[in-house]
Image 1 (spheres, rainbow, N blue to C red):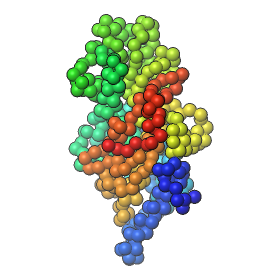
Image 2: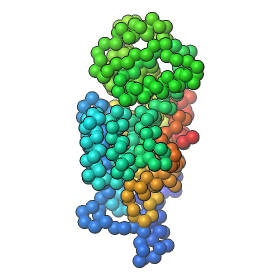
Image 3: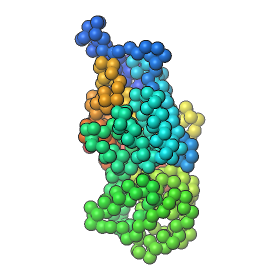
Length: 424
């Protein structure tokens, strides 16, 4: 199987890709050892119990209100780790997950980040909530531990530190590309009087700024802006004010049940205007919470759970088989977490001297030489010294709630999705 002549991009199963990854890595290391001679082997072999494992930190909201996307994130990561371990791991060393639950709480997240440093993981994949991630970034930066954010989308996360110095990477679509993507779409549809409803978290604040910036670039500004705390149960007065301001579309920026509060509020007022937003409109909190009021909502997506090509079909089948479910609650989180693991391991095969310290892994992530044919995208040099975001706007598609599920808003996106996009 591993020796198959089928190239990964032609739709070979992801297990074959995993096997090819390990074989390629072993071959590279063997060549390096041959070149340097037996007395100066390229791989330094660890001693003791750690010799057979490679610890990777995983942090996210696995309990609490954000668990609806934290659990799919972890499951996607677990699936990738199990696939890689099944074919030998990293140069014979099994990947070991060190899992930390941040509960969606910034203070808890900070503590968990500090624990991962103490646990001596080589790198961390994690965070779904922008505010939680923001409070912990300094821990990773200060300790020179690479962090790959597979879920949180707040734009400031990868701009806090200058690119060449930053240890913060990301495989989710930052709001700075999601907001203009959605703004472009609604303006094409003639929805040009925008009311923005944003929560007061770090996610809502950053998202509001991105929406306002995207509108300003089109010489427009919101006709109404509503701010609210998490947990709000009624936004009727703000919705009335937005309607009075002449809004013909509601752009919501919140990550929890508040999206459904907005939808149900519009339904109560019989205010039949569309609701659009970033990827949280694909979450169960919105779709299940708003029910028929969610129908037709539009949102930016990197991955829609339809078997549009063999890579994605293989991922969906493997996920369903492993976790005994027919529907992933938040497919984007699962797919982005899955890809983050493979990107990290691909980078490790670029380290020829066995040095798995933070600076070496950072440099390896910035210089990945092999293309990874992923689920969300085809990753050809996903990162560089100056650019720590793997996802670009051309990788996005517009999703739509239809019959309680997410599908493609445009038939042409479904056709385009047959071909996995590369970074532009």
